Length: 452
Image 1 (cartoon, one colour):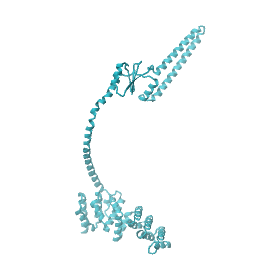
Image 2 (cartoon, rainbow, N blue to C red):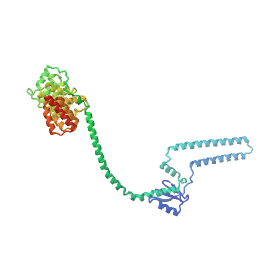
Image 3 (tube, helix red, strand yellow):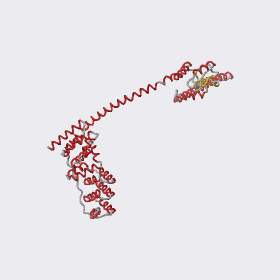
Image 4 (tube, rainbow, N blue to C red):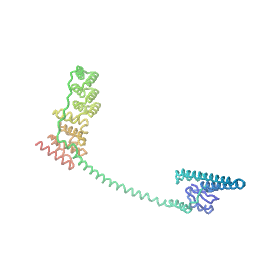
């Protein structure tokens, strides 16, 4: 920033404002003491007259008007013999022309003033450019004492800098103490929120669909597929049997032929390939073919394929199982309704090994009745087949108490006597919360009444 002093006008100009002082030697010395060290003092050439452009134009207009009137008067005196009417008319015409010119000039100045109002009056850049374009500075409307006081205040923060250096230490101490209080508050809030969430979950559990399942309803009926005596189909059924055909390419061709027939005997043949063929590739293709049939009779074969030792077959079976459009809850119920313990045990183990049971435990507390009903049917199959280890393990170790409540509810509804001894062992070996313990006792009491 520069501080400029002129010799003729005895004025100084500062980048922020204007300050009127005398350019004496004493004044410059005083200013050097007041101004900061990064300010410099320079002398400049004389300023131009500080007249506004509007005032200049008005003065020029008056000069032209006076000159015109004077010329008209002289013209009338030069020719005294000329008619008076002619001279009077000339004067009037001249005055009208001057008046019109004045009005035009006034309108022009007014329009120009309106156009200039769009610029910011307080823009430092516009003020700087407009003053530099006129090569002059106007400092009549400024107070020198106020400007000097402003510069004195600008130097005061330097003197206070030493006092400000001690404040960060105090702030650091206060900040060091704040986290302890915040952590204690967070602990209290988190504890209260967990208690509140537990209460809400318990209240929510009483409204879940699992509580409305008081019995395992029979499975819905479906239309069985017809049998076919087509010669090509019979030939393909014989060729997929490894006892008659050892060549894998021939069996592959037979599988493709079976895929074209959506019949009962073709599904039986493809199920045998999906479960017992030596080629993992053919087992995977057979599972995919069964999935495309999308019939209730293919469910058990795809379920057993979920426990296949080959990853390729397991992946195909898992994809196919969830692409089926029929009600899977009825499919689980049909396996129970067979009454075949070996068949039920195989299906239950396949569901456990494939991870379907782990996912279904969470679905017991689902808000959708259809999803909760499917999980209810699967747990019922586990109880009926005697594969209950995963159920009692979840009652002892699951994180969500609502899942424990749901499993105890299914045990109570199914009322299997074999579950009574296991549940008593679990109660003696595990430590439950009061609510879970009450439900365990209630289930044991219910099972004892059934066995008696």
